[in-house]
Amino acid sequence: MIYASFATGACCLLLGLQLHLKWGPNWLIAVTMYLFTMVYSFGAGTVPYVLMAEVFLPEVSSSFFMKSW
Image 1 (cartoon, rainbow, N blue to C red):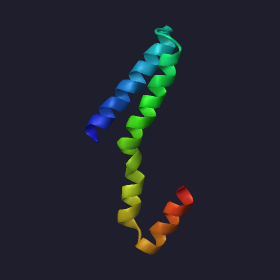
Image 2 (image 1 turned 30 degrees about the horizontal axis):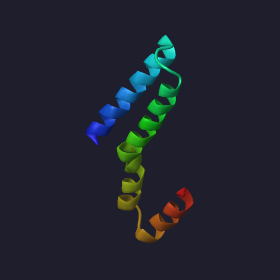
Image 3 (image 1 turned 90 degrees about the vertical axis):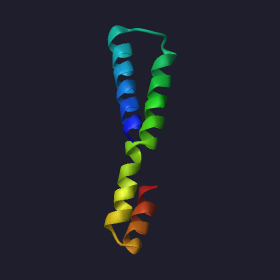
């Protein structure tokens, strides 16, 4: 999760530099956003599901999972 956080920060920095300095081709912005989304889903994006499974009873958490998707 630490590596995913560093990669997410690097994607944010790269995206900010691309948008502020008008640097690089336009397709690189879309690739950076896709990479950010992918890295975030492997890192901090999974935290709510883990917390939900640990905090609530199984009967209640199953209904939350169903509503989140």
